[in-house]
Image (tube, rainbow, N blue to C red; front, side, top):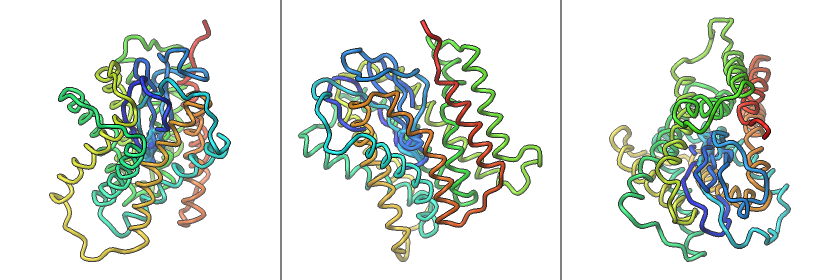
Length: 387
């Protein structure tokens, strides 16, 4: 999933982490007058958007992507998917895209769903920090090209860049790295399902941090149901037998990082008057610099460059963290955030199918059953009382 923050004054361009996104992970908070997108795992939460700027029903603020989103986003809770909080804008919402939105929706689901597989393949040849750095480099390059084509400039202002630095850490650098390290010891299927917990974390945190988000009995029930699903996936009744606790904890922390970042963005960048594409590009650029500084401290330069893991890392960044963000913006602009965020529910399904079919990962009955319970709980947390 990939996650990035932006306002709503620009034309609707396609768009946390970091899914949420989100690469995997996947998965999504809402800015005031903006949309938060988590790439893979990267989904799109949005609620306080002016009615004349949103072509479909808004969704609750804490609904998540995307993820990022493997976050990632996003943010689709950006797998760590691309996770990217971002905004729609004025102007060209009525213009029809060349491809039917259903085709683009399916492509986005596949890109973010396969992000966890790409992370696993990438870490078979390179260190986790190197995979994350490569992912960010390729993703930033795609957005740089998009900005050049549209003649957009990076945002200005030390305050804006300071807040974007925190957002880049919470929605990109941290969750992407955690998912990469997690997949050294857990299967990509489990990482994809962990990414789907971002909406649950978001619901729990919003009850504490956002006074305007009042819990309802249905949403609290969804929260409990979702975490019951997590325990089912992990096989709690068997004492978590055969489960790598460290890797699983890293994947869950990555999923938690997305909503923390969304809440921060909502509190600090909601009033920004910059358009979404430069803000997204700036956030990924900062995350790239952060990883460029950290990676040499913990890893040594590779002595050789295995081709398949390199291609997997390039695809993870260019497709899951760059191109998917742009597709997500287009979907939100055309069909609205409610429909666009439904991609979140396909990410763990595709991640599981890819892990089993392509990587030969084992699958017990508790994994798909628990995943269904998690998704049902996440769906309940995103409902709101009728007025």
